[in-house]
Amino acid sequence: QVQLVESGGGLVQAGDSLRLSCVASGGTFGNYRMGWFRQAPGKEREFVASLSWDFRRTNYADSVKGRFTISRDNAKKTVYLQMNSLKPEDTAVYYCAAAHYTDPENYNYWGQGAQVTVSS
Image (tube, rainbow, N blue to C red; front, side):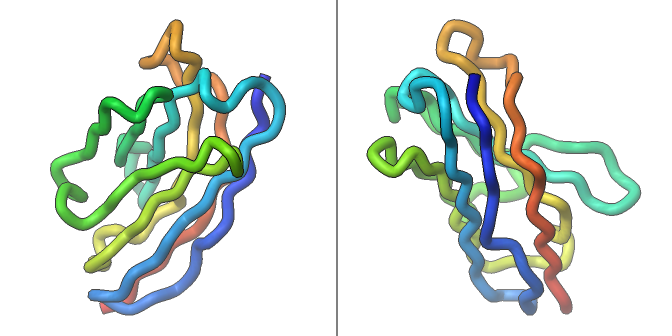
C-alpha cells in the first residue's frame, strides 16, 4: 500500500506559475503510475495528467496541454505537477493519485488534496 501527501497549493494571479508536489511512502514507488486530478467548485472531479511508472508515457487533459507538466523523481518518491500560465478556470482542489502498473487505469491511492486558486 502507498500513502500520498500533497503540498504546494496556494493563491496566485492569472498568468502565474505554481508547482504541486506529492510525496509517497510505503510500497514500491517505481511500480505505480502517478496521476493528477482536480475538482472545481460545483463540478465533478476531472482528470488532469498522468505519468507511467517507466517514464515512457504521459497523458494530459486537452484543457492543460502545453501549460502543465507532470514529472517524477523515484529517488525522492515524489511526483510533481508544474503549472504555467494559470487561468481562473484552473481553480480547483488538486489530488495526486497512484495506480499499480498491473492495473494502471484504476487509481486506488489518493492524496488529501491541495487548493489552487487563480484570480483574474
